[in-house]
Length: 502
Image 1 (cartoon, rainbow, N blue to C red):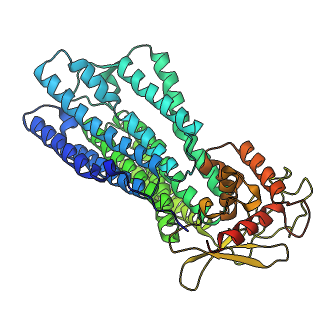
Image 2: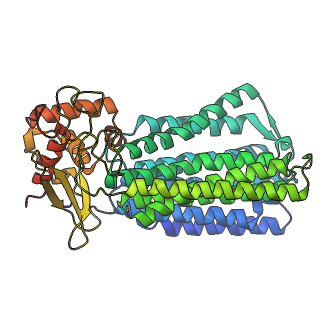
Image 3: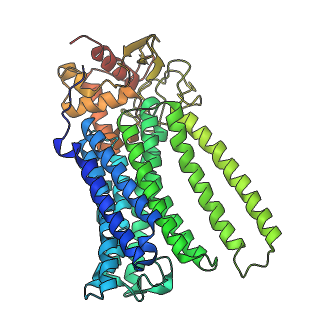
């Protein structure tokens, strides 16, 4: 039984409003550029890229809201607004500089920091798309706080000496930084903040199984786009010196890269929220992320070896770059292919819960008998992380069929409608006297989520998940021992009740 979700009316017209506002900003920048003002800030390629990204974020916001992921929808709305703000501040900064207005300095400083909020919001949107809890995660608060502080500090401590006069943002000599140590500390914290969600989600994905693993993997790839964008920005600085690349070209390239990262992230958010875990889609997402990282490696190394001060001749440079391209590109293609296969692999037979060092909720150290030591998991290898032992196989009509082995080795099937998951809300409240949160934990467990995967989706700590699982086992009268451990038996109970007619 699925619950109908009302769309948020305020978001239905968001793409139209966003498109109109972005279009007006692009026209204004084009007019200022035609009048000879603004330098790279008025370049059509960068302005159009930001406008397209803002519209894409607005479309994603409305789709996420319609699918019931309201937190992700709100964050996608914020992403669209931040991209529009970047465009609007560009118009304001160019216009005030051209007019010699006294507010030109603050306007340029605000514009110079407006690229930071989109990085945070594109990560938060993708992360929220796979979460089912209503509480804001601590990781989200940390990312928002640190990157918000970074934007404010950057606006207050950096001043353009010659804004828009042939020295764009990637040229370090065009900006003066006050209290440099403070700025450096905030920069390091920002880098750590941008790595937090990718590390958390990749860990949760690789520790889970089946559709949960694929959804978390798509979200993890989306959050990886933000640190890759920062790396690209740093490579542009390298390209400026010693690479001697034209600054205007590099700055426009950064605007396009930021826009592409935003579009990629919201597309992944919609995909993950809908539970679209087809191997082709997951493979495309993972490969795009890996190839982007490989391309950055090639560009960075190529810039260094081709620098004016390099002792290598043109032929040697071409050979080095070609070899690096083959090695990095081939490695990324093969590695991401294997990762995509791991994220979408379906087991050939019933999977079972493995033995892990911790007791009770995680494994069998407290008394659960190891069901079948060395049994391969969904990836075809011996599992090393806690799982519910649930597998998914295609049904006769193409719909997903969720299955878990019972204590005798039989498999219990619970068919799902195409493209839909059986939610915690479909489990009767009377099952073992479980609380609402415990039913959510049990539902995620039966989908194949590890403790880290459950924590990532429900916005709780792994210690809390472990405590919930122990309580579930007690309420369901699942004592240690038997042919399968308690995680598998709990999943079987969930599936049996989930498939009963309401």
